[in-house]
Amino acid sequence: MSEADGVYDGSTGGSGDRPDLIVVGAASRDVTSDDPRGWRLGGAVAYGSLAAARLGLRVGCVIGVDGPAADAIELDSLETAGVLVHRVPLEHGPVFENIERDGHRRQRWHSEGDAVRAAALPAEWRGARGWLLGPVAGEVGGEWAGLAAAREDACVAVGWQGLLREFAADGWVKRVDPAPSRLLAAAGLVCVSVDDVAPGVGLPELRAFTPRATVVLTAGDRGGLAMRETRLIRYPAIPAPKVVDPTGAGDVFLAALMAAWLLYGEVATSRALRFAAAAGSCAVEGAGLAGVPTGAQVTARLGSTIAAAGQDVPKRQPQ
Image 1: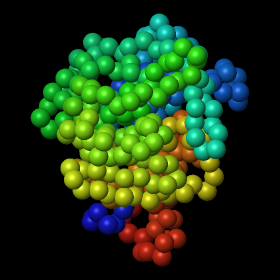
Image 2 (image 1 turned 180 degrees about the vertical axis):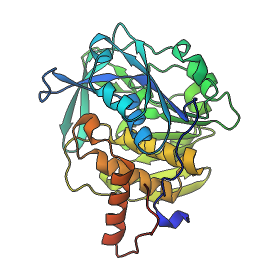
Image 3 (image 1 turned 90 degrees about the horizontal axis):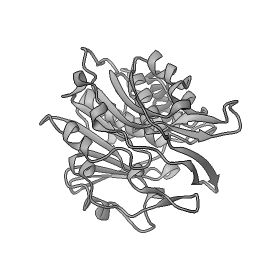
């Protein structure tokens, strides 16, 4: 199937005992009034693991959890989807309050999170080919870089957002400037939102910190850009019929890019970016992890988008 088709057939799935993809990070507890617990489980590690599994990968999830998060019902949904969940107990886990205003998010923090140490990785998962390192606030340290890049053919992705946050003394989550990082140096794919960097910072400036990586700069409903070496690829947003909760859409987007990379060898190609945009579009239609789409949902969104544009829908569809 050509890149222009924009749809994957989904016929290649994970197999074997070792996961195709290891996802690492701390679960966050996001304050909400519509859950009797007063919070909902979140974090890039949760969204990314569930999305990657539903898109056809065998996923191992190394997830840092505090006491309440360790028994969260959301972890059951990961295991039901086939995710191998390895809980790493944390004395303190990150707790955020997300405040949406005029299409932009600010965050207050209620609790800082402890580091997720590389020693927590199950021995049998060492040597996996795919890695998605998704810190929420710096808890995935540089020690993970060596494990992730141990194989010459390793596919390593980093969600940059979690390296661009700090817990300010006034209770707000503060944006920090990009800086060199062992994680970024090991990555072949890095994803970051325009909301996570200072105004005017673009791909050329970001590339200075990511010597090996294809960098994707997302802009929500405005689409985004990818830079692979010196080539720029622009992709359009795929609108959602309704927006219930935008939390986690970027994490689902990155997980879809990883699925395209690991299953089809495509690193942020035009087709992979459209696929990821469709996955992110589906993700905003449900609250929390309930919005994470299946492959069939992503296919349907792509098909309706192609049809609306007056193009022929490819005959081969994801399963």
